[in-house]
Image (tube, rainbow, N blue to C red; front, side):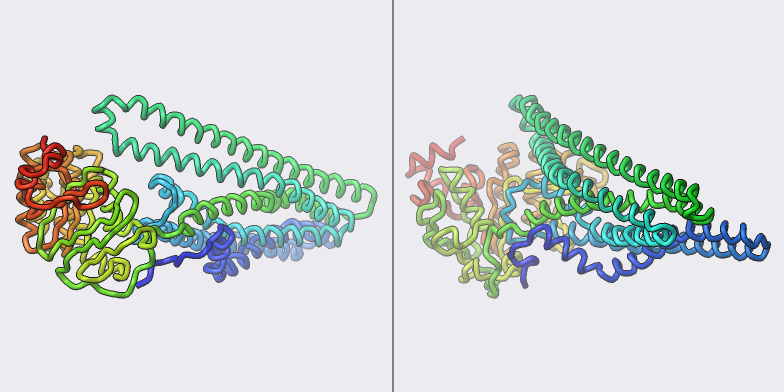
Length: 567
């Protein structure tokens, strides 16, 4: 099994080319239909001018009826081609946006994480707004081409009436686009900065929601709110700047387009007055002068949308081109029910850490330095590339770095103390796949039964995003229940009971030992209850194992241990 998006450089321009290449069929049909629509719109004033001239010359009812029928055909063509052309393009646009959303989200769901340097709120903005704006390129290009077709037809028709009119449209269009293309670059850079600031504000508020209870607990909520206000104000100011730039751009485009339309109208009127064009050609010129306002507006808006799409694509590239936090998965499978071995691992504060947890043993690790506990958990969770640390981690006798993704997921689970809670139900959070055979046992072992009994819906009680309607202890027990329900061969828990009371902690410790009997279990903790329930305790100090034994034996023989874990 291979992870998507094997690491290679993926700039924003490459993302845009990929979007265009995947939708070339829809874009071709969309261009044809939108071109037909624009050609029909252009043909209407041309036909109207011909009708006026022909009617004035012949004055027959038959000619008038034929002209009306021709106009009806043109109007029908315009209506149908617009309807079906936009339907094709918008479907392709929506589908492409969905593909990029899934691709960005997949990067966060891969077991081989990516070093994006972005918070979850920022990634969310990229997966939504930036994906939508990038996919707009699928719709922008056909509209750009069709607008160009209509302007070309208008220039040719006016040029056939008077070369001066045709040149006026062509030169005016080039001049307008030259001015607007310069302005669109400012829009692209401003939009990119705005999206970045909005994303940072989203990440900040997500962090605030998650930590609201503890913030209230020690009175840090006001400082946190001031911090968010600052980030939010920066995003607001940048949004105002973007709105101002967009307003100047739109006003300039409208003004220049109006100047060109008025110039064509006045020039046509002067030519008709001078006898260089006839009445029918004058009607055509005046009609085209009014008509070209729409394609000119669309044509002049395109550079702006292209720059916005490019800016969004560049932000998506931050995620899609980010280097992996761990090497690509191997091709081996771990032995079922395997043991866990840490063999002379050196990383950060870990200085040659070495220990082995036999199959079926419940081992607790008491790390005197919190950093060592965090680094050990990160290595076991495959969040650290094997090349970044010395030594070897083995599961079932095989190196962790050489296992397939499926094997890693099947045989080892590292559950962090701050596991995410998702919007849904208690049941869907504990057993997302709906296949767990130990769901009820996991609920009882994690002491989540009181939460289930508290609500009439039981396990079907609705949980809000990030578990905002649950207390900190309830969220922690829900996360623990999910880890226990997975029933993996090797389970690693890090501080699973820090938010629960001492009595509940004692019960959870015994329940974990009972439920995981015969399965390899490692708990990284300083909790006396969990340490006492473990078969063996390993003491990690200064990055190495300095003592081991049962909790009670270590209390009697290791003063430093007694001081560190006694509450």
